[in-house]
Image (tube, rainbow, N blue to C red; front, side, top):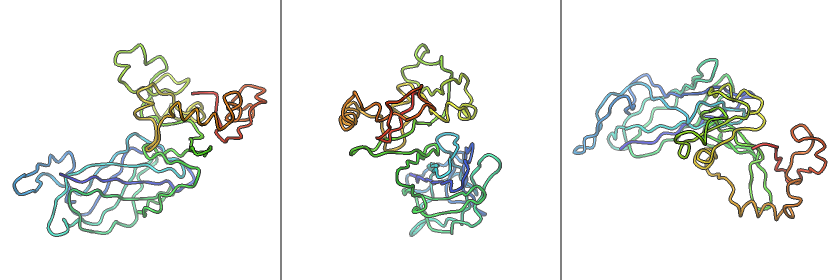
Length: 288
């Protein structure tokens, strides 16, 4: 008895938009939907909602997010919506506000007034070049070949095709929370709790952890529950043993596959690293 709303927000500027925690749709008159705080009730007899309406609807991402240049962040919400008559209720023109660090960005032009009814999903798209936020079309959400946009935290990853498989060519950076390295297997509830770690960081502030050199280079470490249930972008998964086997067989066996997957040079690998060729493009780093 309601509608699902999703906003896709793409950073088209050259710099990261930091610490985004909320988005809001607003109008000059009441929106025919009921925010969670409005305590909407549904009348089963006449099929109508009642409760408090207002001039804004609030959305949140899955976690406080830094949306990198070219990255896309998804905002989700579910609201009870008036059914209206005919093709739906009259929705007023809407403006969108997103709150990156440094000040809110608000669309300069509105999403036009329209009819909308309950029981449907509604999708909105917006782009932000660092100074100007604008409504956009679904086609504006495209990502370049060889890239992966993780919409639950705004990160953008390189990918590589090896044989018939597509692999991420970077370590995962999804970090909705963080704990010190000593937290985990010895703690009560560890078998069902998601734990996220950044090597060398022993506190609980996500923003500070993300600013660390180890996070920027090596990404995030996960316990089993976090790795299998929440870390991967939508549509992706941790590789199965048979997938690793296919990869190593294609690279001519375990004896040589490692060198074909390792990043070359000694920026991250110990010297001399002379066997590494990275001819696969996998760009494996010494961590994880």
